[in-house]
Length: 354
Ligand code: MRU
Image 1 (spheres, rainbow, N blue to C red):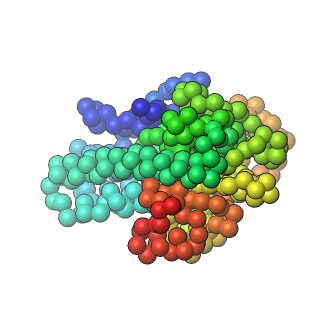
Image 2: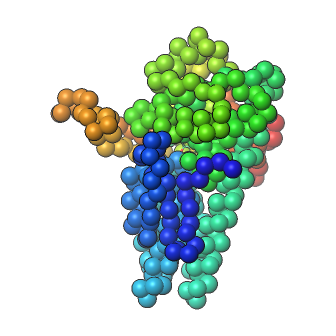
Image 3: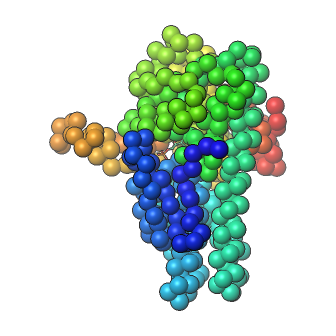
């Protein structure tokens, strides 16, 4: 079983989050008692990664219901306020919106408060199980595609940010594919971008790979081009926070440059994401809201200032890679390689399986 970062304490009815801000050198758990605690933890990136923040927010709704009942408050208005607050915590990952809509669907009609709480608990458990299962299917589709393309030789992959068990309910998306390939004895090495400025690659992906004895080499983001040119990288594989109907994909800042570099080196550039990442309401990536993070994340390193005090900073947390730069998107239901695959997925919610 892989690492777990989100734990529901059934006895105390509280949510425990592994504080990802201090990993890998400290393992601290933060307890959330209500939806305010959950929204603050998501905004501060105690928990991060699109599916993980969706799941955490779902627990936030459950906590809001529990607190409303304890305090004899009207349930539905509090749940609607909680939904609004949780969605605002981080704007790019559509998972957040999707899981909150899913949580509240059907809850308004329930009059009995105990019934509402058990209904919400069963929903959150379902979201958790489905994410875990989706990741295993994404892992199989991605591994099959890469092995078909590159033969049975162990692969050299390059990844960015963290898409593992810490970023999901379990197993991971892009990192789930890496895990699946490792289970098949098909990983030679994984180049891990450190992922400036928040260092999800150095702190979290390296930690997860090390825990599973998967061979990896940490590089700075600016070394990716040289690694592609000199180190025989077979494919780049990343996750996603939101995919527009035309396949344009928002993911961690730096992903777009990797796609451009991969094309220049004729290396497949692949995205791994569950169907919950597709936002069919957006015609293209231009409309994806891109979160901008505080300047301190860029100009302060380990409590030490690293730039002039008045440096002007632009710190977008994500960028958008146009679909034309993407070789394949791996979902739990199959592989998307063309606009026609995307349209089929949109119309029938069933992509073509390759
Ligand atoms: O800012 P973060 O750490 O939440 O960004 C995470 C990413 O960009 C991941 O690649 C994405 O959420 C997919 S996680 C399976």
